[in-house]
Length: 183
Image: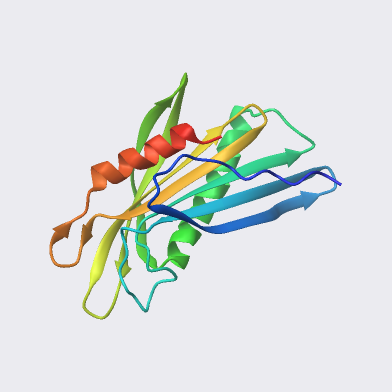
């Protein structure tokens, strides 16, 4: 029996709380098994009461470790496949959290050591109640390692009710720093 996948680790400030840990085997056939371990963190400073969302936390970061058995080297074609399949699953996560009308806006890159990591930028909206809609932005990327991947995603408000602007640049930078620390 294969050993369990260790949880992915990232460095976050004290206001982040781990809310979900789960393991899965999304693919298991005779010659290949794919196993995952996901951790979702939510920002305790960015909350709103809502009957239409799964969580009252408006800002989250998740990281998923993806491993293959038998162990396989990360290659460009495999990276593209993992990225394509997991990007759709990320949109499913957003919908579960109540985000509607999701559309891809652009891509951005960050440097991690000698690697340029590309993130998809998505926009959507969160219907809080009959009269309140919050615009949200989400980032998603796939970080390859030698024999595994880390899937990294985040969601945050672009503005808040009462004309309070959200700190979207700060939110992005905090997410990118978390991704740089991921292993």
